[in-house]
View 1 (cartoon, rainbow, N blue to C red):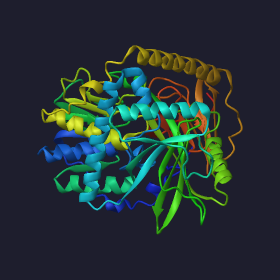
View 2: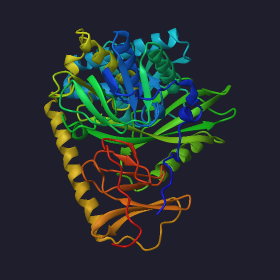
View 3: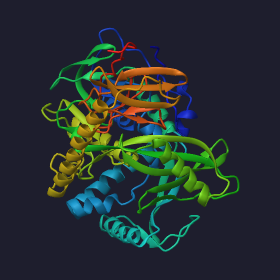
View 4: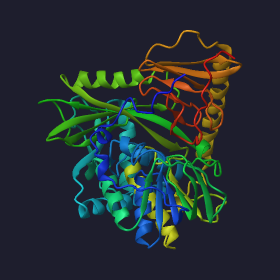
Length: 509
């Protein structure tokens, strides 16, 4: 059996147009030792690392893949305080005081990032943000969101119509929000971090973190010593704190289109109705593209991811005739049961390890708010909004949602094992671009063929033993339990897993 190289089959506009040479990375020094090691070079990791470096600490960022490879490089990059229907959901579960704290955290994150972009000449487009409805039930959600936003101190208003190429029942509108290219932001953050003496390393995965510091971290490049650690990895790979079961991993899709003289939005729009549709414009190479996103689902729990992409493309062509797709990609976001981000010390670490995650798709504000909180805690000046947002104390409704999600995880584990154990792995290799899980030697085996190369790997996620599902859009193996994802050859793409899938011998067992 031969193994294909790990490479994405869908790629975001941001990553595709990014010059990796803009970011100066380094190799780990011999016998590496730092004041702080940050795991993950997305927006959370780089913003936190920069803030800690400004405090005079020796900081290293260790990125398992490349800068921006996962959530940040695949975002729709809307820097907005009006966030779909998030505020009304928080208000219904936690009350107006917590909602105000969430808005203040988001406002601080937005302000810091806008100031940083101005100081470093990062292009930003200031646009209105809207949450719109096309149905009666959606309109009710819009009014609830507007009420929550105004109560939390946002100068939002209601409008009956929008610029969109279809009829809307009404919308909440907040002026002077922002959008940008997220790789421009990461490049500028990385440049300043390195200029302060920071060490940025790609291709090194942190695989094990002891209970408390000072730490000797296990990584794919050997041991690294650190006084403190920040886990900025989407979902923390340690099971302390139960982060993988406190959040639900969800994938959503984004496409960009050339539209000629056709519709392109001035504002940033997201629907209150399901399936969610988000729209914005993208300045690119002297022209404006249309970005359309949506169709989110729990990772590993859809019959065909390719159909999700095709559905978005058909929807766009229906409303914007002549639109021609340029890029398609997917992002993975983590949604806590109580809709509040999980920010702060890792339980049991005596504040020597920190976590920032659970932004529920609004990571442009959430990630920077997490960085402000973590760096503030380290300096002994935590922001006032942090305590009310402590996701370690979920309310009764949040606990109910979490219990329902865990029951769903158990059901998917059982059904996955039944599927993998009862169906024999076919003797015939899968058609090019496809994959299948079946029984071989009494265990689930995942077999795929990509570009004429067939790979057979264990069909069991190395995190907590879920049976994997084939992702036919991105050509990956996705775990329906907690969102770990693997390339056809078994290499880790993202999620809480820290070990690749084991290869399976060609000969029958």
